[in-house]
Image (cartoon, rainbow, N blue to C red; front, side, top):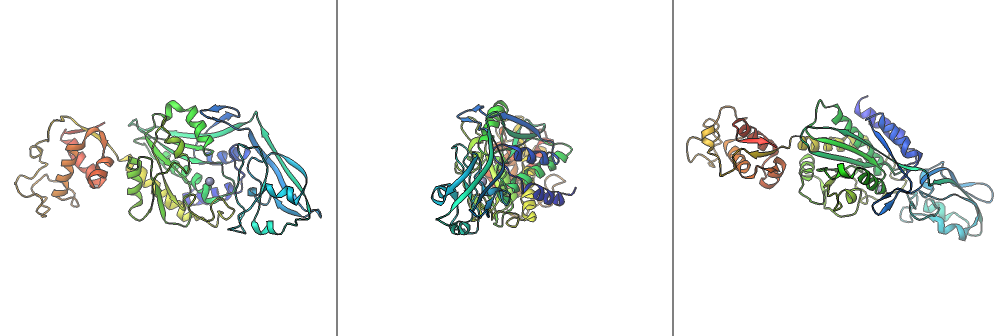
Length: 442
Ligand code: ZN
């Protein structure tokens, strides 16, 4: 299926599913995504201790409603899965207005929106409803309430991954979260963008680096994944946490905790100058876990209408009309370009690393002294096959940076970042030096 049609079909199929940290909605979602990329599912039993956290009981819900004395349904889970607070314990009975109100969540600032609320680690129950519907409740009335849910201590948390093996020994993660119910930008857009990105990678004949797609419930899922695969994850070089990719705002980039790691450089090159920069903060998504001292995996996020930054965030107004397939596919293309920069990113070392090379011996330096930096761009005096869009001054500058920086540890993206030279120019110059047996790739 072509990508756009696949994207549209996934949005349609996945949007209505009730997802949470655990439960059948997560499994159903992962099964649908498995049709796009071959995912391996991992079940982590409830009660499993992962560092300072414990995997909660598995939550499932069949129904939930509030009815008036006359039998009219006022809120219903079947109408919107946002109406029941995530992880609500079961409840059935009659409540006075005063006893019911502490269990109701509204958003007075957006009176028509149903907020999204959860209570994962404190046993509680509740309903979310629009503030306007709340104002219509009768303070003198009694209400009938039902939440038909289960918290199963012998259940499990479901997570999924897929892996592509490259040849360089470097590995990048593409991580996203699958725990939000019917909310489009946060994070159905991230889920779909991630699997479409991995699908593109999997369709390549070969990849330079290894890539690991990780689909987990946010926070506890990332922690459980890091715990179970800690030996592998400690070797990961960097990656992206893919979330909120299709909102109406301009593209943005939340940098990794390092701010200038190759994943940051690649993302900024892919985005171009016109994007909203978000500096790193230890809030947000699973970069908090990946970046923790025991793992220190730098991860960035290319986003459109980043979580926290839009009024519809975590409300029923973050629906399919808030996002667009065009913007989701644009974010996908941006991630794809960023990965292209990572794929082309080579780390070289010098075969002989003392002092500069005498470049003239290899035809890499003008024969005529004094020509450089006079703005002539004379291509006839050096070599024979320079591409016309690199002139002699640029190449000489690139050679100088490569001779200085290629220590087996500093990549072309690092050198580009430091020097301001384009990765394409550096890659071309490095190839020339490699052909002359001056450099080798690590
Ligand atoms: Zn969220």
